[in-house]
Amino acid sequence: MGKIGRNDLCPCGSGKKYKKCCLKKENDIIYRKNILNKLFKNFDILYAKLKTKNYECLEKANIPNYVGANFRDAMDLIVTSNALSLLSSFFVFFNLLREDADKLSIVEKLHTYSYHSITNALNIRNIIECIAILNMDDAGDILDVQKDLFVEQYKLIEYYSYMNENQKNELSNREYEDFVDQEDLLRRYESGKRKFLEVIKSESKLKKLFRTRIPFLCDEKQNYNTLIQKYCPKKYLNYYIALSHIVHPSYYGNFKSDEEYNEICLEIIMDLFDRYDNVKVGTEFTYSLERYVIYNNDVSIKYQRLVDNQIEILFELASKFEEIFGKNNYVELFIYEIINVMNDINIDYLLGYTESIKIKFKAIAEMFACFNKVYFDELKSKTEHYYFKMLNAHTQMKINDRFNFNTNESDNQFVFDMYKKEFPNSKLKAEVFYETFKKQLGFLIDQNGNVPNLVKLTNEFFEEVFQNDTMLVSDTLTRKEIKVSNYFKMCYKESNNMSHGNGYLFFANSGAWNDCDQIIRFFDNVLYLILQKIEVIFRLYSIPLNDEEKEINIREFSDNKIIADSMKNALDKMKELLFSKDKILQSPKMNKNF
Image (cartoon, rainbow, N blue to C red; front, side, top):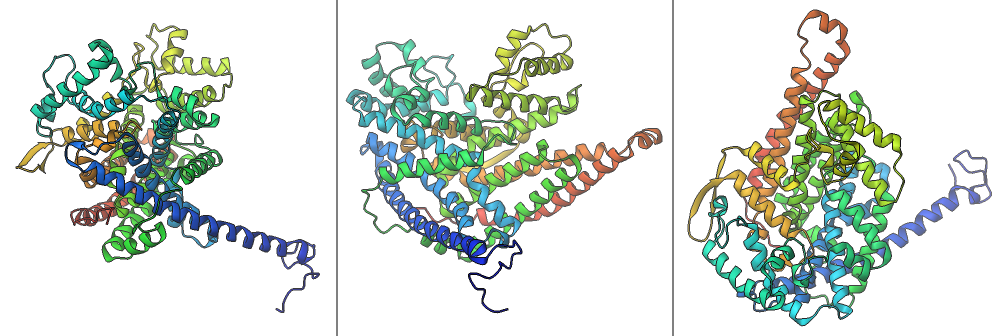
């Protein structure tokens, strides 16, 4: 076929002239790609600037006894650590815009959604919290005495994390005694406490302050919402509320708007451009060069291939659930979120962003614990899909509250009716139910109107999964055998402390950078265990009790067997991958600041 003339009919069959049809589209694509390529170069430079600043802050944080501790350095360390993780995932998504999407494999397409994961949403939320505090400082509203307390607050944060507050001046959480030097913890606590009491003069107020995430401001009524509203652009508070909904357990369906999430991400990246514009790039790599160096060695290639194989297996499972039970069923949505998170922490792992993996452990553990509770408690439920329906309604309620939508009274009545059907003996009145339902885990409200605490639910999940399992850990002096559940409870506490923009990351112990291998093992093994439990359930429900039951529900038993067989096949494949992956996790790692 010869060259198409501008006035020829367009070969696409539209009936229009080529110049008014596909020629224009081709020019638009070329223009779009040119713009995207320029943006990519700018993002690449931003990445190198963030890495330079992150390295400088980390060097200061590593000075013994934090004698180099500085308020701005501590906040910049949190911003840049979260931003590097966010940008790393964003680059993968951004590359899709520069490529022909039709040429990408399913796994490559799934990689691009990693930056939409709940864990990357946590990165953005942390950045917004830090921006609010930095803007507050820029406005001159943080006093020098508050900055002095900022350097002291980690001593009390750690003490309150590892002690029973009911026993004064005594560490009674013996499950953590193998992890922390308790005498040193108490000594530092007393030192930090004296400094705080010199300012606030009240021990009762001190405890209230440390129930907030920002105690150094000495105002127990202060929270991130109020700071963001006062010191950030108007839309940041709406962003923050949306991100907080995303990172906590929810229905993983249409809760996240791709368009809004992209807007939030780009807005924050533009803020980072302005904030770190004056940083002089040293020897740090751009993302493009760093990815080329790290991803092209034999170990990284093998590791990436193993993760890709895991993702293929999970995608096939999600597709099978969609085929049998329809689109947007709970297991399918959960598996897709698992794929997103797996991709995200895999990028962190290969690039050496180990502290970011530790930050994200909070969201990961809560996601697994909540799914385990919601999905497997269905077996105890009298109402079909009760907990999933309650979770879905709870998520919709949060959306309505955020946008000030009036909740339909009939919707409220429907939820309450579901609850009464599940718990017919409950004496809870409708108005009390609605107020309780609004709590973080309101969808798990029981017959007496009680709602579980998220931290307690997650810690109980660790105990259920690991029971009496033990593991060997090393410290500077010895190797100790400890309970696996206690180890992950401690990781969860630390992650809770690190997953907010309160400066704690600057003072976090070395475990913040050394626990990522165990967290990835946790992710893989707990996922495997949950898939096993699902397989057992479907296997049990694929076997009719008698011929009459089989004749009535023959389609249902057949579908359950298909799922059970698919799960068994997936588990067999996954087991081999986990063994191979674990060998790589045992190999020496390259620090991110190479």
